Length: 421
Image (cartoon, rainbow, N blue to C red; front, side, top):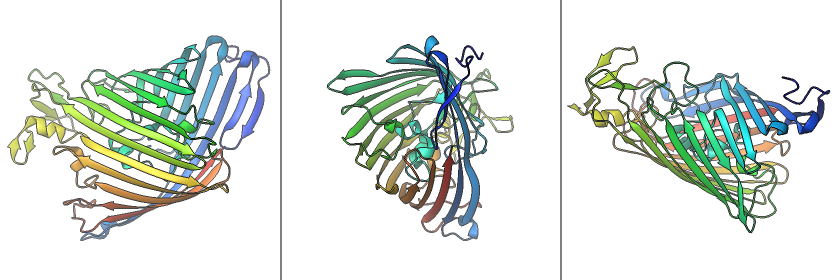
């Protein structure tokens, strides 16, 4: 194995940069990078209800990650392995995973990459292509938490083609299991097929700037990427394709009958001289099979009741448990030469009539307004401190954790410190 990785002849530490990790090199151009980061987080939420449950404070380790990447030029291979030891979800819900990335890629040419394993997917909105340690604000947007799958297991192909005048096209194609991260139990439903097409009219970003939110390098000329994505998940067993087997339906013969889920998005990223702007739009829809007759409860028992507003309606009941609707996120910021930044975001979620986005406890909050500040020690994200305040409008009927109606809107204050080696 050591020979295969190119380190049979005294591997050397080429460089160490806080935030970029340690890079080792061996014979024939082999290289390996080891990096990691930790983030510590505090949050206070304030709202008005008949109890104090709408107000709470929490402290936690937000992320604690270790990542190993490498290149094996002799065999046209590269790889990544990343774990998270914090136990926290990428988007703040109850779903967490220890294994983040585990893939190997073959590069038949300098312009084409074919990757297999568990990875972030280009069929999510653009914010999910950006590293968590490079976020402009303390947390990702509500569009991301509402519609993204975060990571999937399957086959990923991508290209990077210069089309004249310094312009680039970057196409992506994915075929995954449709269940989010690697499914250790039964694999439900069919495959998920999707793609993305990015266009860079002014050339490539500097120092991986396309995959980092803040314009840390202060681009000397305008940089822009515009993209669109589409995917269809044939037979989905969760709300958005993130948690395999959490929602199961059966037909008369007790065979699985699962809805199809489609997602469409348009997004862009612009950077110039310290200013950056990110815009995203996502829309989802579902097709419910007519042969559904039974639903499986969380405890494994079954029921033939599909009650919607006092009436039996299979289609609307199924849709009511999925993340259906549309949303857009627009955020912008400016980083000064002293590495101090100011940032702002507006996020809007519009739920379909029958959608889990209408859930009164977790969602039913259509508008989010966020202001943030941050201080970085260097352009490699070695250390940073961020703070933000979010005001969100609460929809009619929204509740606190004890089902008490919330009578006003909500404020959430957050602070995060991040250290990367």
